[in-house]
Image (cartoon, rainbow, N blue to C red; front, top):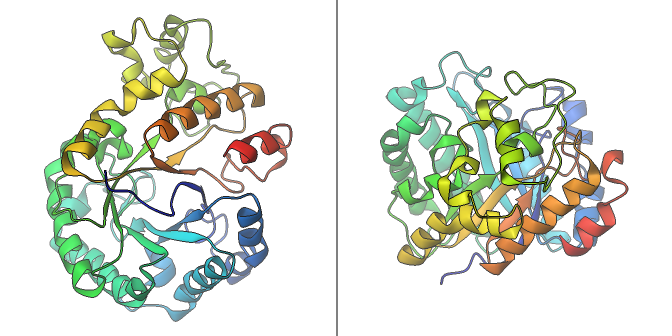
Amino acid sequence: MNTFTGFKKGLNLGGWISQCVANTEEHYNNFITEKDIEQIAKWNYDHVRLPIDYEIIMSEDGFFLPSGFRHIDDCISWCKKHGLNIILDLHKTKGYMFDKDAVKDPDLFFHDKALQDVFVKIWCFMAERYGKYSDFVALELLNEIVNPNLQDDWNRIATRAFKEIRQFAPDSWIVVGGVNYNSVSAVPGIDVPYDEKTVFTFHCYEPLVFTHQKAPWVEKMPPDFDVSYPGPSIDYIREKSRLIPQACHGAIFDKDMDDLQLDENFFEYLFKPALDTAEKKNVPLYCGEYGVLDRAPVEDTLRWLNDIHKALENHGIGRALWNYKQKDFGLADSHYDPIREAVVSKN
């Protein structure tokens, strides 16, 4: 099967020029520096995924901002110097972001041609600017389409962007995901004019009640909600999941899960529909986000990471852990001190 070479083990750089804690030049200049890229390379990762919010690189009246592109250019330069590949991920476009509070109407983008034109304009400019780095720079169309009912609309928009990008970046990897928060179960529904430099991506935070325990942004999540991994049984995770609306519709409730243990076989089951699609179309898979909130017990976090890594490695699926620093998941933060060496050594 086709292989996403050079993107086996990576880290996300969330919080730098996307979902920023402060939209200031001081933040952009200091949150990520060359020393961070050097550290990631020393940890033997082979790439980073760089989330980008459109307002960092484009003004509200549609002009591109050299000051914003400087930070992308710096990161690309640092990555090249330290032997890392990089994925440029448009995390937010005008009119759309996965965070429902970030835009007034999160579905408007999928029905508004003017907003879609801006999306394509951004990608034409990015492809023309960075297509020359196709040996180590990949392009990810858009992060996490939330609404599962927008599959056809997203496929239409992604197809248009794909075709436009190919005019400027014929040799670049194009990374595209599906709906329902980039769910792995949505991979079979991805319908773009794929070629030999196309990657299908998904995110994995299952079971959500474990990876997002105590997360304040999850609806009806108590601040003292404790969940262990693997836990005593599937039923234990199901009971916990029923208490959280966002978690009560996951694959954990599939009848086929009844006889499975919470280990790498759980992830094997999750990945199977995507693997079947990838094999049929000869398109590599990539897990662009996965991780555990820093409120979970670190010993359980390590067990979860070991299990998902086994399943990903069994099928040659590249991955990028969320997140390098901060954003409640930071591998470089003090919460992960007890297990960081074990995570990095096996990463």
